Image 1: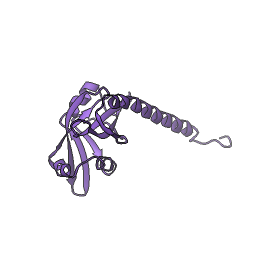
Image 2: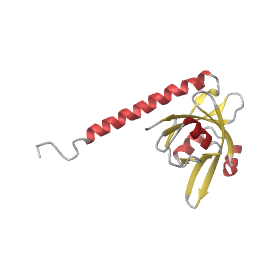
Image 3: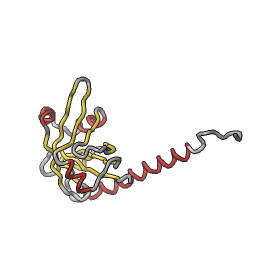
Image 4: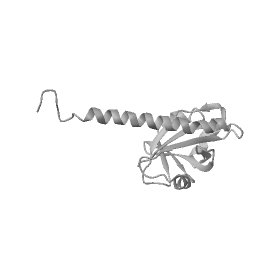
Length: 160
């Protein structure tokens, strides 16, 4: 083996490509957000940072991990809504075109594990958007300007 070479010679290129891919996802996500601002859905133009999740083969539920998702959610959640999360809190998810998808947000606490699930409508969203396993979804939380209801903007990047 030549001096300075190693079995990991191609690793640097892989890392650079991965970072480029992340930048591309961020750019696409930002372009998709602009429309929702323009149509006036977002109250006081307060929109959370994105929570990104890679889709699994479960199209019925989107599992959202504590603590990062919860940290974002709590900035927008009202006290009286916190108890509703156990039974399910009706929310509206918007796509980049402003189309509405009614869903349910629930919090599950089992043993020492907590997680959130977005369902009852998640399948319809995935089906209409032709989303598949490994695609990346970015959720941004906000309050609707007219209804003041908890809402999400869902943007996505197809990974195939």
